[in-house]
Length: 230
Image (cartoon, rainbow, N blue to C red; front, side, top):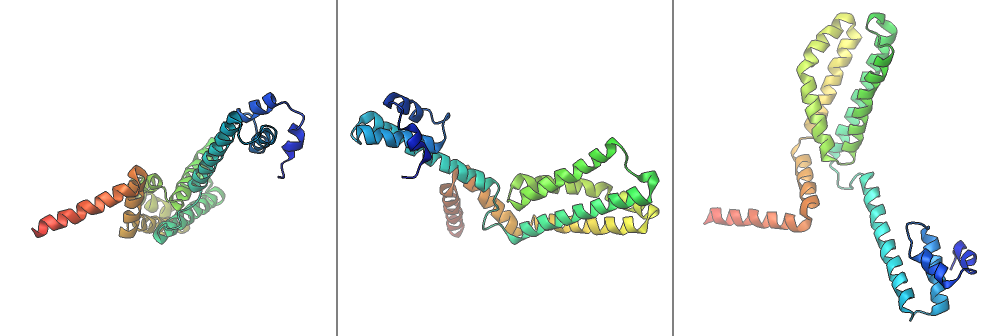
């Protein structure tokens, strides 16, 4: 058994090893494994206290693996994530890129509209939030999809006036804004296509009650169809 703690712990007493094994929050997993291993070597597998420590160690290992899987899942896109969701996320990133180009153009070509001082931080914070939302959408987070949709729809209310104003200052700004709006609209539509809505609907019920809830829903749907036939 390759474990650097075994040699280090060989000089420790049984009580010291039991203390280490009983305090998983204070020691690395290899240290806990070494402590239990040495206790088993000294007392044998029939010792009840050592057996309990081994069981506890295995339970903790399993729990830690589950936590790691959950953490990985939080930052990994589901394998069955609809292509429309991925495309929408890419479009949002593209829209943000256009927004940054517009900011740079204004900064260097229209001094009267240039952003200065603390306003730069404020202006950059908005793209930063949208980048985070786009990233969460690419991971299949429904709250991000809804948040983007609400923000985009609210933005469309003032967009026509902004586009007209930007055409007055420079054609580049106006056309860039039109293109940016079209990209955002396509992303919004993609996020609410039928396959995407169905996928998020299924994912929501998985989180609420697992496969049993989905089976129950399908049973109720089949039952209602049967009643309609009657």
